[in-house]
Amino acid sequence: MRRVRGTGGAPGVALGRFRWQAAQTQHRNSAAQSPQQELSDFARAQQQVAQELQGLADACRREGRGEAAALLEVHALLLADEDFVAAVHAGIAAGADAAQAVQAAGEAMAAQLAALEDDYLQARAGDVRDVAGRLLDALAGRTADAVPEEPFILVAEDLLPSACIRLRDAPLLGIALQGGSPLGHTAILARGMGIPAVFGLGEAIGPDCDGQEALLDGGQGELLLDPDDAARAAFRAQQESAGNLAALRGLPDETRDGRRLDILCSIAAPQDCRAVLENDGRGVGLLRSEMFFLTCGTPPEEEQQLRAYGEVVRQMAGRRVVIRLMDMGADKQAALLPLPPEENPALGLRGVRLCLAQPQMLHTQLRAICRASAEGPVALLLPMVTSPEEVRACRDRLQEVQVELRREGFAFDAQMEVGVMIETPAAVLIAPELAQAADFFSIGTNDLAQYILACDRQAPSGRQMDAHHPAVFRAMRMAAEAAHGAGIRVGVCGEMGTDAALLPFLLEIGVDEVTVPPSAVLPLRGALREMDAKRACNP
Amino acid sequence: MKEFTYTIADPLGMHARPAGLLARTAMGWPDTAITVEKAGDVAKATQLLRLMSMGIRRGDEIRVRAEGPQEEAAIAAMEAFFREHL
Image 1: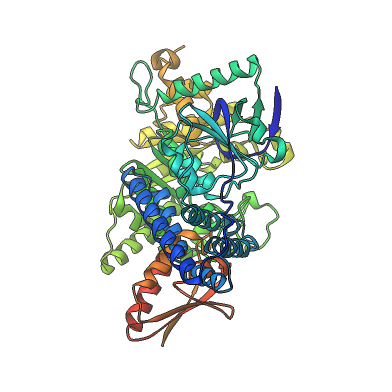
Image 2: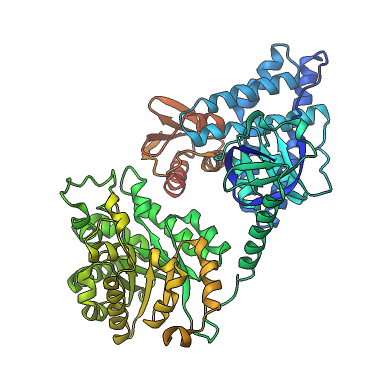
């Protein structure tokens, strides 16, 4: 058994035989014909590739694989790019044959992209090489490689995005590449196809690996060549538990005796929606909008925010989406909002206090959230609340925005709920008053534990923080009782929500929903469904 | 001639998909010269590879110009495009 490390390209594990795929595109070595002949050969190849790409893009679209289709359409545009075509024409005019000219023009354009500082655009050099490679195939009259009929792990120097798409019907178990970039389109496509991939393996694998058996772990970014029995057993166990979890998709979040506890997801960006849907989360219980602000150099405009929120709402297709106002300050400082340094940022200007102190930013965000609410069920969540006045002030701002939007003719949900995060001792102590002002509670256990225990969770000493302290449990119970006293729902988000051992406690205090990272949904659902609420609550 | 300036807000900058969409949108105005300029570097909006290799990133200010018989409509379409996609 030999272990080889690379970089993770797409998560998942695969066990199978290697099939080496040699790089092709060595162009024919014939003497150049007349420039006119070479130009017409090039035009014919261009037309043939354009048709192939169009056909493949149409097929992807029909199969609901819009991402792959959009990529192929970009390739079609690159194929017709005027600078690329001009460079090929110039090469032919200088005496090269069509293939030489395509290769040289493609390499020059790819090198230009590869020289850029931006990692993402560097990775686009692969798309240019892809298009040039297809043209070379067409010029040489080559058709796509024969695909093995037996399940296989593909090993190659590199894999062009379009070649990856063409493998969509092949019994492809995994992808192992000497090169490749996790930012490249091949990686994005592999993730979309659910094919585990490991990149950057270098010379450790090569043509001599053909036929060898290997275990590929895309999440860890490593390969085991000739895996031993222990490794095979671990692989089978992992597959089985993944299979057991997958069987929980579509099942209700309830105990054996029918007590419901909805499991939602916390996310930071529209890209995370895929994980929510794959793991069958009941919705988005916490969209951390500040992550969007933290990555922007200037405060994001209304349209930009609307685009992000709207995309989440559309992808959730009717599942609830709770958008939390930007929760900046403390550990989350943004370049766009230069705040004066504070002696003790965890106790400084943050959360809803900061939102109310920045009326323009709050106004813009509320407009974007309201407009997103026209596209599906949306709720607003206020972070770091310490008084009912803060809730009322936010509701006033919200009402102003709604009047404005109505006047401007924008659609929105006038009944949008406004929830309060319970994450400060003050909020726990005045929970009954807050429950009168709020439509729902969301207990944020990470901050709540830090503030109740006066223990900074960022500091090294924070490792000693015991979130299972009785004071934290008692605070959670008080908040849940206040919520139910006022007839509103209460949820829990944070680390404690992912701990299946705490489920009996959450059921006992009457929590209605938990919000966890997408990967925790199915394990938690499995634990919940094996539980008996009556027994759990009255041991 | 009509023009506007715009600050790129998309976290990925001028990446492949919006650049492709931009090129295709600009192709809808064949008689109007539409250009994108970043710090003195000018490309036609239909030049996909040039657009990608200008390295336009978030926070960059770009200037879009349209000149020709349909410049009014073209610049309005361009402005809407940038607001929506970049």
